[in-house]
Image 1 (cartoon, rainbow, N blue to C red):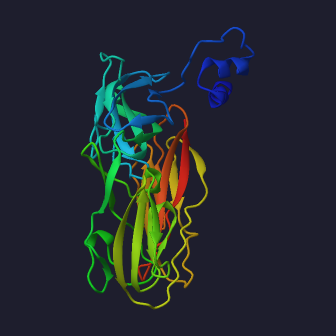
Image 2 (cartoon, one colour):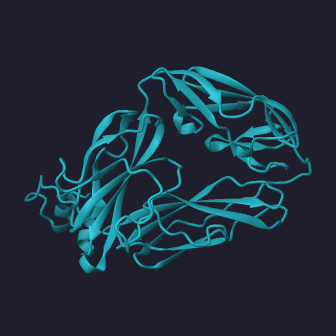
Image 3 (cartoon, rainbow, N blue to C red):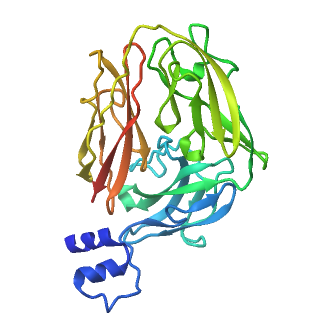
Length: 353
């Protein structure tokens, strides 16, 4: 089995297997999937928003699959699907866009609607339910990343906030949380109106949007489309996307006491075995002034796991059963006592059989 598993790392087709056994000339064309896998749409492909594509999976060696459920997520959206091995469907808090069954064409797949309001990098998560007879069910998953692009042109940019935007003591939108000190990081809710009549959220840099602050000493533009309050006063934010631009005046009035934002550290990527208890550690996160930190862990890749102590420095979960290595990704943000935020950091946990 070790040789076979190593061969699957080279490629899931029989070509990699043939190399492992020295039989390349005998098995040049046969495909052999080792585990449940999304074969369509292909990872990395570009899809048109609102289009209907075919969802297709290879069951591999995973026997007893009774249904496959498909979910769309943005690149950084939290994983909202919860599958409990003790029940058929678990607790579903994200919409199922397709339920594929054995009698469908193709089996366990079918027509899949790309989100009409989708834009930028998106994840397609497929969760297969495996029957274990009297033992109930368990779930396995595969996930691909695609790029979603509207066919329609962007016609205008707008903001889902007051204009001008007031941050701090002069009053503010609840969407930005509690802002009363330097160092607060936030994402500006930017939307685009498109020629097909659909409004899409274009806040993230992956959607082709960029930001300019007229006064970086008031609001500084960070990576990933995030903005940070670094001073008090007025500035104008300019948003650029697809040859269109829009402007938002911002008035910041916060406590000017010097405050360096904290630094989050989610630790190194790790590989674990199914069934083991996994600990995520943010203990190396720190605040330059030595203040206590508040922690926030969230999962942004992989089928949803039950994450314990998500608001503590160390969170944990039980590694699910998998048929071949699967990646689970987690995000950590820390905040100091004055309200300054860290940039998000990420850690990958690869679960092996």
